[in-house]
Figure 1 (cartoon, rainbow over the protein chains, first blue to last red):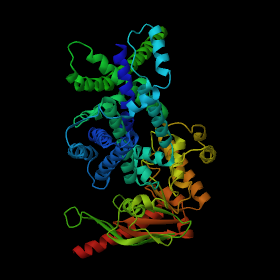
Figure 2 (cartoon, rainbow over the protein chains, first blue to last red):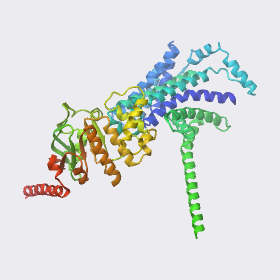
Figure 3 (cartoon, rainbow over the protein chains, first blue to last red):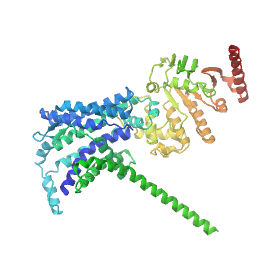
Figure 4 (cartoon, each protein chain N blue to C red):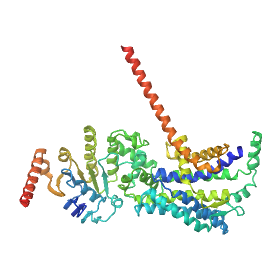
Length: 328
Length: 264
């Protein structure tokens, strides 16, 4: 149980980068960008093929980021210059990327098990330290019977993801970032303050998909393969993370919201891992579980709010009636 | 400062819905001119505003700001020079962002936007100072989301955002029409103060004749896409609503007679 939850948190932190990308397009730009399903795989494909060609893993990962940026920008260009509806621009790009990804990979699946990845290299460096031993000793003393093989992935990914979060927070408060947020909030207004909303959307979608591709490249290296179908439903997973996170952790400020999105991605992984341990559910049910999670996260907070409101009004009514009775 | 030359614009040309929105408009504003524009619905007032701001491009004719011909500038590029307040109080501000963030966006109007924080200590002080001139207590609510403000407060903020960078042209499109009388009066007074303070070259569309008479140094009346009446200075000061209505009737009457004559 502990090991599978550990794995869930580990992958959750990596998927959180994708969720931050989805937050940028879906919430900040108010642009439901379906490119994500394709650009996630593009990231994985570019990184995998580069690693196969002996490109250093860090550079391979950065190449994936660039590819994701380009993919997102094209969606932005389709929408702003081609005047295609946002949803359709994303769908068109997603479908096009399906073929492009197969072209990049040359086949539908690239195994990376015998290749160096960012995580195996990290682990090699990590073994020089004593962190694993001391953390595992602590776990054993807490009564956990099986301990994880390495903490390097989890700890380093937490640092990387939190760093990306802080950069995103900073960016959204810069002059350009403010204009980007206003583009999603009130486009007419920010255009009347001399901001080129077309360019902002293109750049915004580029950054969003760059993050998604980064996540894809890391997941490919983490899981040991890139697959043409690994992005199916990714946008819904991203949305699930954003919506669950916002519902659980709040959206008061930008910093709070980005943290919530990361939390949402981790909670999502934990819930899915936990659900798959139920006997009658199989791993092919994952998409169904994802959809149900999003529906629950969307509906439950509204129902709770509605009940709270109804209770408050009932209380006020009762109070008024009692007072009237008292006067009579 | 603003030079509108021979502007014509027709919507749905060569269809049964054809509408000649503007027919050869000529208008020159000197620096510091405050012009109020009146006219019935469909007279072309808003179309003229949109042509000047760049949301519409004219079929023929030119718009120049200062010495620069901006006819072909896209809206966002032109808005470096033009401050704008819309009729809808929701239109001029970003509701999910805070007051200081909204001001920071307006502050960046005539500068290149960079990757440095939009709000810093110095700017916050500056924003506080500007907000205090509105006298509605917004200076103590810098971190409140603008969506929480009332219509009047949002419109006051919009007005400040449109003006405090001292744009070359200020366009006010019935900006008090959606407010209750007391809020409308507040915004009207703020408008007068701010235009005076920064010597802004202003074009204001209004349906409120009293407002059109009270504000500004020049008044134009539009009808059917043309400027039919244009007074300024002492002549404008001497105008009353009755005289204005009479003038309106006289000019329209003549026009109607002309039409009838042609038809007959």
